[in-house]
Image (cartoon, rainbow, N blue to C red):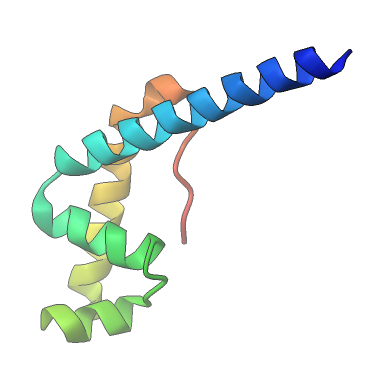
Length: 88
């Protein structure tokens, strides 16, 4: 491998990553907003179910249910990426 091969591979990797990010955000916009909200708070804001429940004024069990449903829908929608979303 020479330097030009590495540069090309890096551009391809960056393009694939950008495509993945776009796909995730499109998928997020296509799940119910109450599920997308919980998924975003849990994954990107690193909030616990209890913290999300307090903010949304619902029970932690409701938050967990919305999260599971949202993740299942995202996995289904994003199956073409050949990876599943695994967040606990």
